[in-house]
Length: 270
Image (tube, rainbow, N blue to C red):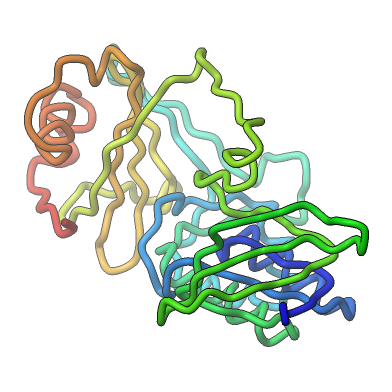
């Protein structure tokens, strides 16, 4: 017999875990399935001030602050002219939330997943959803998933919430996914130590360096770690040779404002 529930959530990242926690808190019977095991690496490490309202609602603000680097604003740097413009979140429209954090996503996602379980959601890790059939006459969908031991599990939820992120589980299977040809970009990234960090009133700022064929992020994390990534359009990746690491190294070398901050940097991620 399939396991019945009110809502089955596909994906235990920030969106899925938050939705599961809030729904379970309201008395709904929620099943949350995550294909990997927490903690697991993910990019998307720089948060925004209004995320704080969600963390307050979940009761995890202090936990997030403990794992993160305080982020009071952002700066944008031009590779062409070498000048920067800074924006302080204190000048934002909502004065209740004037800063945020840069966080290791492995730790953040684990906190939120555990919060969903604490709020009453039935959580499973290492469980990959493989099939979805919309509700029939009884009003329940049919969902199949493969657990960590390879066993096929069957669920019969009233509603299915797809929070699978880039996997776009349901859109892929329904044929409804559409690509935006005007935003055909890709990213290469790594973690470094020894990158020059901003100080003074700009300490903790994320830096966005505008470069040829794309842009860089430099995100300061705890323990002297700097997340560095290059986001480029098709021309930035056309005809490339070597590994993704080679490409990132080449792009850093070709961006004066980034290279200047990374003269003594050491890559510490794979």
